[in-house]
Length: 343
Image 1 (cartoon, rainbow, N blue to C red):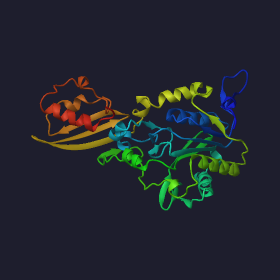
Image 2: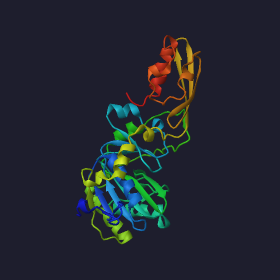
Image 3: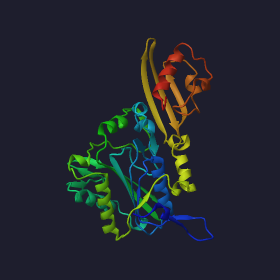
Image 4: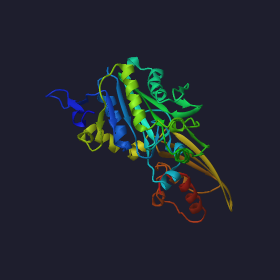
């Protein structure tokens, strides 16, 4: 293995631009903020004409797509109960669950030669090399026995493109189900909705498969496909790498409100609840995480108007400026719980 100290180079003595110098990277960090930021740094700074492979695992977390609504995709109550964070990645696609039983792959190629089917075949050959009879569906997901073991997403920018995805090996599938089961059918979003599918672990089909054997198989398949002879370069978030400004900024941005919630596409949410005095229906319209309007049928109150311009899910009682006694107090407690993002 190559030392992380030889990971990158300065383009010239007169330049401060740092560029990656290898074709295959294996991150031993399990910090999703580091791994996603490192992936983006590779995407933006690696030579555009050269293929590149990144493999890594994350500590338990939910990762949503660039254009998704977290309130629609993440079960916040279940996530809070298990202290599991969620992250908005920089690529499109649907929501996935990461843990140490899941291995993530990221294949970068020139935009001019990018083919989703071809990159999927690289991963498929790796899985088959482990003795598993897998195939690729119409969405370029890796499936075994009709169930999905790997979900994919893509990003294209300038002269570069990547195909990245998960590979469920020994993931806690019950936790995955709890965290991604939301059930807000009346929340209508203009963003991308996840396509729910039955999932499986590769370990169900072969005792040979593990994180290490899968990594080795993908590395071998990638080398064969692209004629690469490099050995993997091992990196970690404790290396000098983590002090690169671009990566530091990425790690700071991902958990920020502006990125995590402020990038949420426009959505509308209609909810109804019966109280002792009658039914109340709320219709909330929000964009970029900010409430544009809230109409309340069944309650004569300024509460809906007071919510305009406030951050959805982050409204404190003192921000409202309205009398919160009687019916208003009860209805606000209901709305606050429905919009809840964190405790």
